[in-house]
Image (cartoon, rainbow, N blue to C red; front, side, top):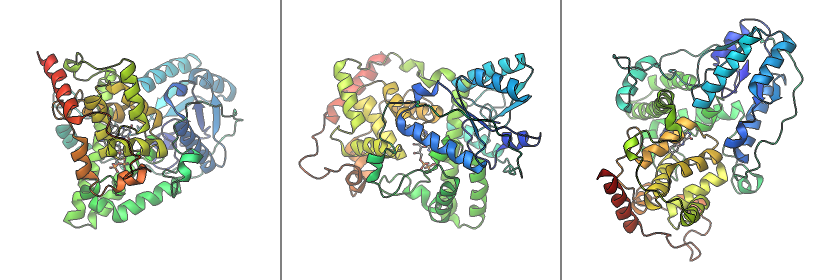
Length: 447
Ligand SMILES: Cc1cc2nc3c(=O)[nH]c(=O)nc-3n(C[C@H](O)[C@H](O)[C@H](O)COP(=O)(O)OP(=O)(O)OC[C@H]3O[C@@H](n4cnc5c(N)ncnc54)[C@H](O)[C@@H]3O)c2cc1C
């Protein structure tokens, strides 16, 4: 069983299939390709998640360092394993890697067997009657709901784990991200994200007990702990969304109309996650290029002054409270509130006129939940280049967004130590002027 983004034992279709065959070697490969995509905070979380998985297996997780093809073909030769089970991957890199691994394994008389995915409905399954994929969320989500009925997979009893000696874990990333670093997290009352399944379960139970019922009212308020914060656990597969749906059905059955609305809106967010995975699956080029190619010619700034502005944005030194609070929350915790992600992304594109890809790359380095499909399409939504995108000409005003979503200023005060003092920076740009500039750039490409 080759674990990747599915670092758990429960509700795990591929592991259940592997265990039904007999002895299992549980493997995690530290792929050199990780180095380009990770900052230190993300790497730290991955290590913790891998260590926690190994502990659940009685310490028998095999950790190997190297290219997956080399690792797997050598392991097959060494152990006589005939099948390598995986949870199917749908990102461009994951698909390409798995195709190469499958070929290499078949050349040595073994096979790669993909079972299940990290989604309730596998990407590619939701199709129109014509067989085409959906390009818009609402009709996708209607069909998705009819398919999102898969039952939770039973956890195999007494898996017979084989023990093979592991490699020492190398240093993958030396790009500090702050997230979960001892220094930046020392100021926080508790670590924001734990890789321990018990902690994930406790958080989820709390949310089911008294969060999801008011989710539709609270989810946009930046200072309130009104969302599940399960994106990190889902990114690493510490929990499968199928299990969450099963629990929600129970909560729903015992709820009144108002609470049901919260559950309905929350389920719709899970559907967004699956929609974006589906879009990326059908259009892999959208990982780094505009989905709407008509937006390709829009002018963006990339000179030295642009890089300087980008630096201020990354450090949370723009002088716009809600933007700075969000960027500092990201640095300190490796996570940012969804509403604030939308605001900082809009600011980068429409107030600073920088390429959305710069922001997306920074997010992927820092976010513990960094996920290619949700991140790139979240960015493209904000940039007006993606699916269901906010029209380019609708420019978020950071002042009114702050009044609406952080009305007491509590969120800004939480993340900006100099908030409310004369030390806090003046705005780095004039929003009204930059809005006009953004609209002019848009008009220019519309001819
Ligand atoms: C610019 C930008 C970048 C983003 N990058 C990522 C990313 O890298 N990884 C990521 O998981 N999410 C990303 N999102 C989506 C969203 O911000 C996070 O999923 C959410 O903030 C996670 O917090 P939560 O678990 O408390 O969410 P909740 O509000 O509790 O939502 C429950 C779950 O639904 C899913 N979800 C919620 N909102 C979205 C959304 N807009 N798009 C896709 N899935 C959603 C997530 O899996 C989330 O855990 C991004 C959004 C934007 C605007």
